[in-house]
Amino acid sequence: MSANILDGKALAAEIRTQVARAVKQRVDKALSVPGLAVLIVGGDAASQVYVRNKRRACAEVGFNSFAHNLDGNISQIELLSLIGALNSNPDVHGILVQLPLPAHIDEEAVIERIDPAKDVDGFHPYNVGRLVLRLPRLRSCTPRGIMTLLARTGVNLEGMDAVIVGQSNIVGRPVAMELLAARCTITICHTRTRDLPAKVRAADLVIASAGRPELVRGDWIKEGAIVIDVGINRRDDGSLVGDVEFDAARERASWITPVPGGVGPMTVATLLQNTLQAAEMADALIS
Image 1: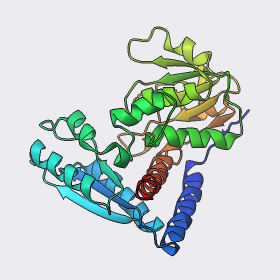
Image 2 (image 1 turned 180 degrees about the horizontal axis):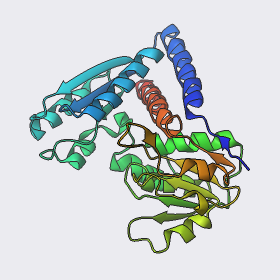
Image 3 (image 1 turned 180 degrees about the vertical axis):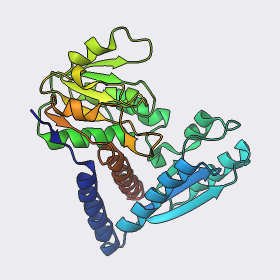
Image 4 (image 1 turned 60 degrees about the vertical axis):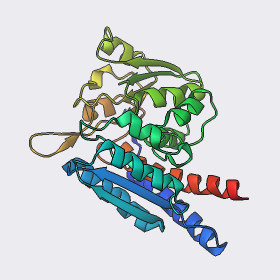
């Protein structure tokens, strides 16, 4: 077989259109325009690209964008103070601090300083805890985007054996909670996992998010499995590959995401959905 391609780029474009329509409706009703503050500390090249894409997406859907390009030597106290000011600003509905941060900044302290109601990355312990309790509010962007992609397949996930390769707080752990809520049976794999190939071969659904190029070999994929490749790895020649050996896996899977053009665009589109949701939550508090 040759797998169906889960086109994240096309689905993300649909989501942006839906968000833009919702923003226009808000404006027509004299409601506030959703505002997203994006903070980047230092001049990391990859982070600059990610932030530029996020700001472009904000402009496309009609959000107000608040850009904060901060010196890499900013103190933690100054950064936390800025976040506090943004927490208090009613024009800002979402706050995103681009990671990673410089070594002298405590990332956890920064994440916890963000008002959970404005935590559009879904990283705050409050929002993670609500997801664990099956009371989700603002959900981590990449995992939520993955669930949107999976919904597009039309496949019922209940009862599936799902294997997640990678245990990060950004993808692996929250997507495990998303899949558990969808009634999958989940296995989280990591660097100490014994016989990773055997575990992947038994999976109906594979989420690869280890950050290692083509770690998951094509012949590990069970016939008819769904494969979601979160990895984005750059080769020496500048080309991008995922965490899955795509061509070989495509011959065995029923659905598979490409790299690029799969999960990546969905992360940014979901950020827009979260920011719109945060604005709607703020409306509810006012009313």
